[in-house]
Image 1 (tube, one colour):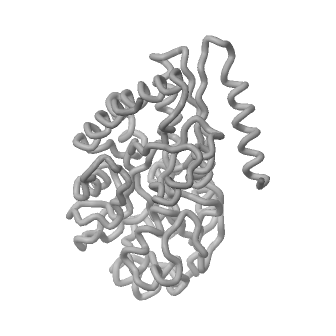
Image 2 (tube, helix red, strand yellow):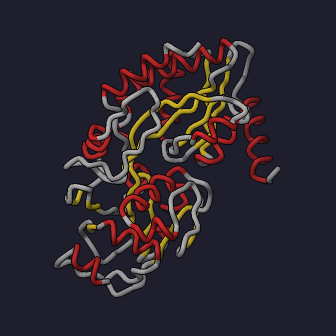
Image 3 (cartoon, helix red, strand yellow):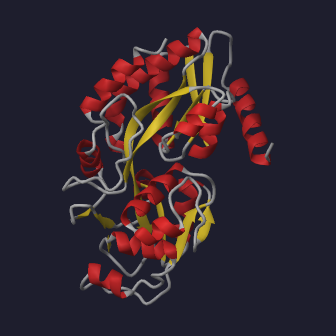
Length: 338
């Protein structure tokens, strides 16, 4: 057992003890990605106001660890920005159902004090920066996408995630779709063999390192860039348009690739829509198929609330609400939980 896993289990046990002040309060503890953590914390606070006897607590430890914790039974629920593979579903000690909860986006955030306008990035530029083939801010490829912008000749300091991360999966899923060299050399995953760069833990860690490092660039969830007032660039989408991440462009990505069944494991990176932001993604709540009746009641009621009133909180926090058609499909799936 790794030290990190031991630490997390201790945190879970401590959390359950600390957050369950009396026998009349039932506490559920979940673990997972940092991508949706700010919204989940807000959701759980709001949900508890109308259900004072229930507690939902969340440890933002990364999607990879979140999947492990819920599928081994160490956590009551999990959260991931990565859809489980067939192999993971088959091998899981605890079988789970995946429910998309909200939409988000990974953005190229940077620290260039010299500039006062957002940069434009093509798929080739982003792949080249993270492959190490584009090394300076005034590279001809960046200059061509940003005519008239006074780009500094400084070296690009690349920042990426340290731990298994759903945001990394979204980022590398996108790069694998749009760049053949990236696909061959690196590929997609929650952890990948980064060719270049410095590592930081969590979306918050990436943002902090970029803020502290002039001429750096990293990827993070949109909400973290907004909260920290960190500049982030427009990205050219599959339709050839440079699009800035926001609620409208993220929802446009989801609308252009709707799920065709109640298997909600769908990637919407590089979506075909004219206004779609290309590095958009769902994030999923992982709910055990079998649990005791009280915990099942709590999670089902939370899912119903999340798909209705909860969506109203998403846009003000840098996320995008689920498409109505998808939310309706999920409501029907919730009622099938026995």
